[in-house]
Length: 205
Image (cartoon, rainbow, N blue to C red; front, side, top):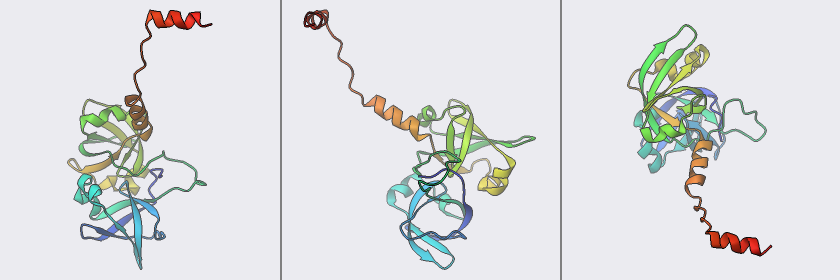
């Protein structure tokens, strides 16, 4: 589990399609879970200047190649003793969005992000969302997009300052919304009782 609070903006040393080498100040242990641009991956090797993770075929099917190029957000998995200061994330990317509009405000920057309309139902106004692993609050939701506001501190200390219109981003929606929908969707419909059955139940008392 993760919180969406970025530990470091690290640099990709190389990616051969399977092994992703990251240069970082943070030193994990082999077997640790770590989120790279919001994607939960497992540390398989330690390097002098960072670490290495393996990227599975399913991950490559969903995540754009550019998310493992250049600089990336990294966050180690949270421990049970940690404070939850962002929101609970699994590191499982639901969809890839695209930045369609950027508006600079007096006290922040608005990012409008388009997303597959299927996932809009999981994006709730004033609810939580993770963009490339960064925990954010949804301000507005539209038919095929949503708006988040980035405060100057987050803008200056994350990759958001490098994003442009057309940039693609990893999106993890609120997992509580997904769980609730799954439970409701798979509930067995309640049988409608007939009046005869109701009378029979009444007579049994």
